[in-house]
Length: 180
Image (cartoon, rainbow, N blue to C red; front, top):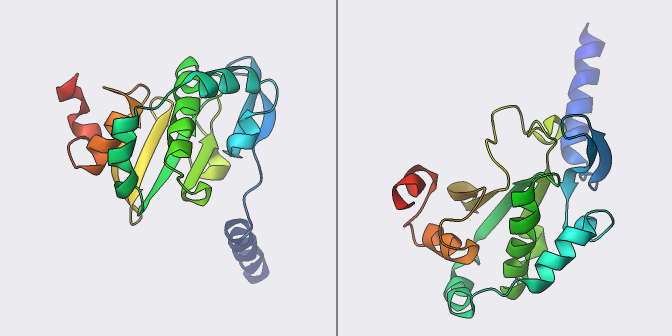
């Protein structure tokens, strides 16, 4: 019993300490298609079959320069978690746009954590369980490790404006319905 407990502790510790594996393509029964699943980055979306929608939206989106100028000094101490489904049309539209905004801000890639979920909106290995995420994509903005706001599914104004509102303390998930 003692050795089983020690083995389990070692396995949990090793899983946490090891670098995360890149996103993998899997067949998802809930959506009846191949999806990207797990920890991902921009390069994963630039591979077929995801590159078709990602590259098209990324290239065509032009971030609002005035809002980006206002965002630039505010993003230094934040981190961003992006939860998406490659099977979801909202994710296919908004995630490439969000990455384009981050690129325009020269936002460090190591401060962005992206997880692709299955059709049930879970990725248990990445600590996303049933009910944690209602809609995808979900962009979570963190300041010093504490969530200060989310953009859920579609922005109220635009991704960059909603992000600026979050960083200015004017918008968060709880008051989003009041602004619609």
